[in-house]
Each structure stands twice: as C-alpha cells, then as structure tokens.
Length: 332
Ligand SMILES: NC(=O)c1ccc[n+]([C@@H]2O[C@H](COP(=O)([O-])OP(=O)(O)OC[C@H]3O[C@@H](n4cnc5c(N)ncnc54)[C@H](OP(=O)(O)O)[C@@H]3O)[C@@H](O)[C@H]2O)c1
Image (cartoon, rainbow, N blue to C red; front, top):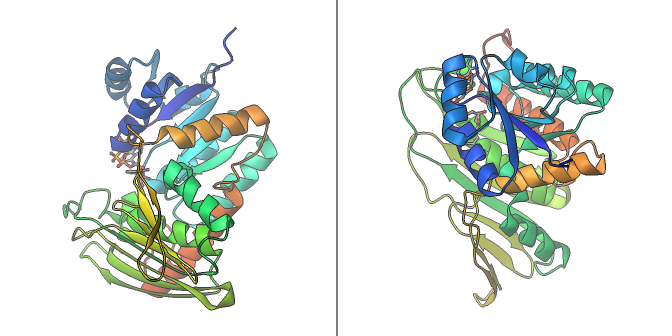
C-alpha cells in the first residue's frame, strides 16, 4: 500500500493551476479537484491529469481518498472553505491572506484544534530554500544585531474594478494581496510589532491601491514595507544588521538569490537560486512532513502566528479605513 499523501485542490483559478503544476513536477499525489462547477473541475482534471473531478466543494470534502486540501479561493472565502474541509477531517493548506480578519482566523484555529487536523498558511516564501538559508545565516550571528527590514512589493495589476484585486467583495486591495508578504517577512525576521503606523491611498472601489507601513519591533528595531497595485517596482528586500546586511534579489518573495554584504560593501556570501519550478512544492512538502509527524502546524509558519498576523492586519486596516463587506463599519 502506498503511503503517499493525497492532495485535493479547492478552486481552479490562477494559483491553483500554478500550485498543481509544481506538485506534479515534484511527484506529489494530486488525487482530486473541487470546483463550484463540474465543467471547470473536469477541465482542470483533464489538463493536470487529476483522477477525480468534483463539481462542488462539498463533494471534495466528502471524498474519503483526500487527506489534505489546498484552499485556493479568494481570501474572503478561505474561512468558509477551510472550515468545511476541517469539519470533514481534512488537513488544510490555506492561501494567503490566511483570512480577511482575525476573527475568521481564530475560528479556523479553534476548529483545527478540536478536529486534530494540521493547518498551515500557504505563505510559500517562508518555505523557499533562500529563506531557509537566510534564517540560518541570521541564527549564526553573521549579521550581528538585526536592526532593520526593508521590503517592497509593488506590482502593476489589472485596474478593472471587477478584478479580484480591486473588488472589496473578493478581498481586493494591495495590503491583503501584496502587502501581506513584506508584513509576514518583517514579522518572521523581527517578531510581532510593538507599534504600527500605516497609510494608504485608496482606489475608486474602496480598496487600498498603495499602502506604506512602519513597524517598530522589540528593542527599537524597525521595518518599513510598501505595497502597490498600480505600478511595478523592483520588488527587492534587505535585512540589515550591525555587522552585515542581506540584499535579496527581485522578486525577493519568490525563489531567488541574495548576497551577504559587509558594511563596507565586501560580499561575504553569494547565494544563487537553483529552484527550477516556481517553488510552491516546498510548502506542500512541509505540509506532508507535518502530517506524517502528527504535528498541528509548521514551525516555519505556525498557525498561531498566522492568527497574530491577522490581528496586525486588522490594526493596519483600522488606521487606513479599509472595511470589507459584512464587517459592519469596523474590522473583525
Ligand atoms: N501564493 C501565491 O503566489 C499567490 C498568487 C496569487 C494568488 N494567491 C492567493 O490565492 C487566492 C486565489 O487567487 P487567484 O489569483 O488564484 O484567484 P482566481 O484566479 O480568481 O481564482 C480563484 C478561484 O477561487 C474559486 N472561487 C470560489 N469562490 C469564488 C468566488 N465567489 N468568486 C471567485 N472565485 C471563487 C474559483 O474556482 P472554481 O470556479 O473552480 O470554484 C476561482 O477560480 C487568493 O487568496 C490569493 O491571495 C496566492
């Protein structure tokens, strides 16, 4: 009997396709796909050679031959879809942003605890080889005292008001789509913020089109991040310590290279990217390790930190005045 872990894919959109491509290339077992429509499920199954196509998410949840579900719907639906899968006893890997607000994130964490299933936020950056190496370098003390994180995620995305990134009903806005990466990175490097200062400019749909965030972290450390939907930037990042800094190449949040640079400019280490795919299999492989080990989440992206990050995002949204449908005037 095979001991392979059987993946189910929830949703057939852009990132579900990329994720499934990487899983197949890495030799992982994609057993089923679920879609709101039978046609989409069947087309996806045919294209990616997936054995079972379900024409509803409920059918995917009821599939006994699925162990873990990758939730790839727009973020306002992550909680509903993750809770449906958890209730069916599935482990879940949930796309970023984990949810729209902290209240939803708390509900997922509680349900997972009660059901005894594993949950990881699919913040794929955390699992990529260059990030693993960066954490090793920092742990070894090469940077000295890490004082500052600078990270930018500016893209030129469609300005169609009905597009997911602009429509509030689909979780639109730079913060939850793009800003989540530098926010999560800063917290990974420096811990949760002790002070938050945020400012956005809004688009006509009410979604934030640009958001700038300053965090103060313990010990007077700072991180500065910027995200934008309306103009493409370099998408670089730096981690700056008293003895050296790390300069991460664009796009810093995907598989890429970096240099460790001394204050005087001498390159102490050069890391070259060798990942041939987009690199989404690393989060899936970590999910498989967590399931096999009987753990409830990953130390690289613990569910407790995903919940804490949603609280931070709620506080940012209070400052920038970003309220999603159904939140009735205040976040959460
Ligand atoms: N990790 C990354 O690099 C990355 C990149 C892009 C996006 N994402 C995240 O992944 C999620 C999906 O993004 P995407 O770009 O793949 O979006 P997308 O192309 O619009 O696809 C979303 C899919 O979700 C399903 N869905 C369920 N309820 C829906 C609803 N009410 N309206 C629209 N679609 C609905 C649909 O699948 P069915 O029709 O088959 O049910 C749809 O194809 C978002 O949370 C986003 O932040 C992550």
